Length: 421
Image (cartoon, rainbow, N blue to C red):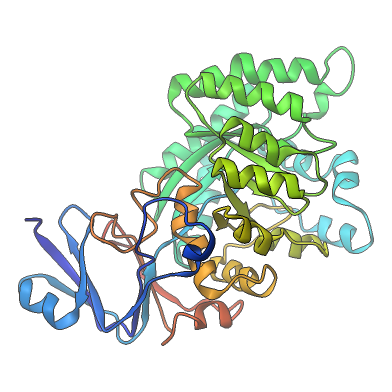
């Protein structure tokens, strides 16, 4: 029998999200399995042992440390399955350009956007990037996130991409959350490969022939991602890159159909990608393909809001079709500079028209599924990692209700304190 070391008691509600250890689909996504009057017992191995009435837990484990939730709401730690947290300077000037009517792709053509972050990151040392990211990770943890996917993609050279991924590995040693690294060398075509004698074909060859093998050899990433979008990487180019990544042992993700439909969701389904992300411009055929493949649709409502675009991803159509839907922040310096995951829940409800239960499952279980971690994290049930967040509310529906207000008091990673308020 597992030795219980900690009891989390006196919560008004516990959002367990207990259920199948996979992406939840359709009506099952609406059930966050909220329980009243129960606590959570955590073992010495950092995993949940049981969820039961407080009195029963205290009687069964008299020597355990008591964590008093003081009438708050206890939830699984949020799983943010899409971020770009390793960068240098902010890009606040682009917000004004967009307000003046300059579009995302036009900003990129002018050398802004991703290219601006690339120029900046290439000038920075690994130590500088680690220091900048550590401060951001603390702010992210303070809002209840305990698992965080982090992409490269602001280097766009062999040396800078490897540096970014090595920075993520360094951060993982003492981060206040679990980090999942993703290689995104195909985030853009760097400017130096847009004019003779170099061209985009040469850069794609660099990504497939040098970057991916080097990333795989060092074990620096779990996933490979590509920005598959008209004006960035074509479906054919994306397929070549992702096939090379799969051959090297990496799992697959796509930035898909964010601004225009380009059949990227269909490609994600064809290749068995773990997730297809963004999807604001997905077609009906793309929705059907994701449903058939079981690929997680990771929706990023904060991005569309910050870009001022009127169209969000069709969350209701995706849920109705049986696609597992996840929510993520897309934290990055240009199009979604937010560390506030409860705000993403708010947008999931108010902009995507998810129920609160659907939003919680999207932020936990389905976020875990989008990272291939659905058997490990995302729910408070026996055997799962005891990643928890405590909120100063009396009903779980208040967490997305108080929009922009951080009510997170503490988080725990594997049962151990991560953010202490």
